[in-house]
Length: 89
Image (tube, rainbow, N blue to C red; front, side, top):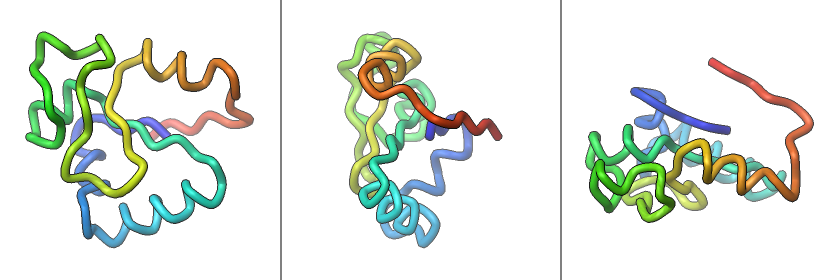
């Protein structure tokens, strides 16, 4: 699942929705990724806007298992395990 804009706020540590998603993701091998640029702008990642898209931005203050990245990192993460289903909101 890829989160961007204000959707990433539901993945903040201790948010009930985010905690449930984290548990479900662990049990079902689901990738939880936030847009690195959106996360940096909301102080939910370590890194700079210049680093966005490079893979160097790290999520912070989010539930367990969430990673920050952009489409290159998303495609790389899914490369060996393509999704069965894509859901967009």
